[in-house]
Image (cartoon, rainbow, N blue to C red):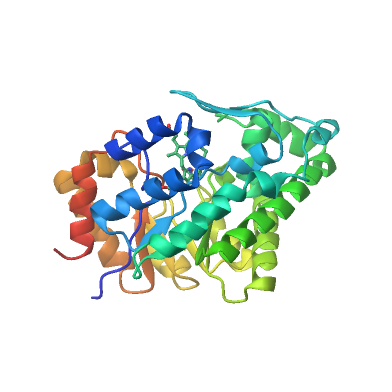
Length: 328
Ligand code: 1CP
C-alpha cells in the first residue's frame, strides 16, 4: 500500500520551542501573523523537523475580522478577544475598503513560501468559513453555547445575512489573492459548524461555503479545496455534495468504517487522529494510526489529525507519527 501524504492541523505552534522563540521575537501573535519573514519561518519549522508533505500558511482565521477593522487581541491563556458586533446596526463599524491592504503581508508570506518550501511539498492557503468566523465576531471570544450568534440568526436572519455577505465576499477575495501569491490548495475551516441544527447548518455553513468555492472555481476551475466542517456528523454528506469541495477533513469523532463507505466514496478524505493521542504517544497512538491507515488508506487519503495539535504535545511523538506514516 502506497503511503498517504500527511500534514497536521496547527503543525506550527506552541508545542515547538523554535515557534515560541519566533513568537517572542515578533512581540505579539498578530505581529507574527503580519510579519512575512517570521510567518514564513514558523511555517517552515515543522517541515524541517518532520518533512510533512504540505506546508500550511501561518496566519489565523481571525485576520479577516481584524482587517475589517474589528479590534482583536490574543490574550495569554484566554485566546482571541474581539469587540463584539451583535446587530445589523453595528455592521457599520466594519470597513471593507482597506481589508486587502491590511492583509498584504499575508500575501507576501504566501509568495515567499512558494519560493522556499521543498519542491515535493504542497503549499496550503486557508481561511475560516464565514459561520465560524462570525461566531468569534459576535461572541467576542470562543464560546460554549454561541448564545449571541444563535440569538441573531434566529431573531434577525436578514441582518445576520448581511454580515455573512461581507464575510463571503472578503473571504473569497482573500483566498483568491492567496492563490495568486502561490497557494496550491485551499482549506476552509468550519470549526463550529457542528453547533447548528440541520436547516441552519445548510443556510449558514453549507451555503456560504458553496459560494466561496464557486467564487474560487470561477477563476481557478481546478483548484483543490479541502473543507473541514467539524462536528457535523452525518451532515458531512450534504456538505460534500452541496459545497463542491474537492476533499473533506474528518473530525476525530467520525467513525472510520462509516467514513470509508459513505464519505470516501464521494471524495478523498483527510483525518482524523485524536490530537490527544498524539499527546499520549506510545502503543495507544500507534494502534490508532494503524487502524486509520488500514481503513482509509486504500482510497485517496491524506493523513492528518481530527483537530489541531495542542500545545502540550511532545515533539518526539510527532516524529514517531511521521516515521510510522512513512513506513519507517
Ligand atoms: O502563539 C499563540 O499563543 C497563538 C496560538 C495560535 C496559533 C498557533 C492561534 C490563536 N492561531 C494559531 C495559528 C493558526 N490558526 C493556524 C496556522 C497554521 C497551522 O495550522 O500551523 C491555523 C490554520 C489556524 C486556524 C484557526 N484559528 C481556527 C480553525 C482551526 C481550529 O483549530 O479549529 C480557529 C478556530 C482559530 C481561532 C484561534 N486562534 C488562536 C486560538 C487559540 C484560536 C481558538 C480559540 C478557540 O478555541 O475558540
